[in-house]
Image 1 (cartoon, helix red, strand yellow):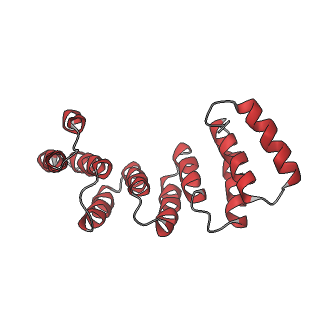
Image 2: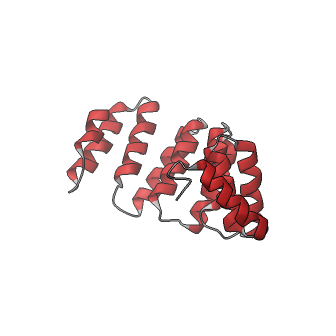
Length: 168
């Protein structure tokens, strides 16, 4: 929580003390990686997250952390791989699916992004976050009318928010 609160110096001191005592603790190593990420030290963050993943290969958050590092470094194929690993552990999490779509769009894989969204949404009602992603993909493909229809479908569902429509 110190990291999220922007108290980097205090967080660094605490994490370094913990790391000195618990050198093989994946959680502490991950925390150090996140601290380096927040400090803009992406190479160091990546190395620490890789180390944490090797110590705790089933940790559900490490692939997401790695994906964000890859995103900052502009390495979208690696980002896609990391997000897919996270999805294998949490296949129903729309936030992770949204991150995958973002990676696919950034990599220029619009058709795959569309397929991913349609496959996910075939199993459940259209999620607002994913609807926005689908609308963005369709719009980038020059299919503006379908993009607007996608947003309108979400708005027709109870709880739909008009900000989506205004963004189109």
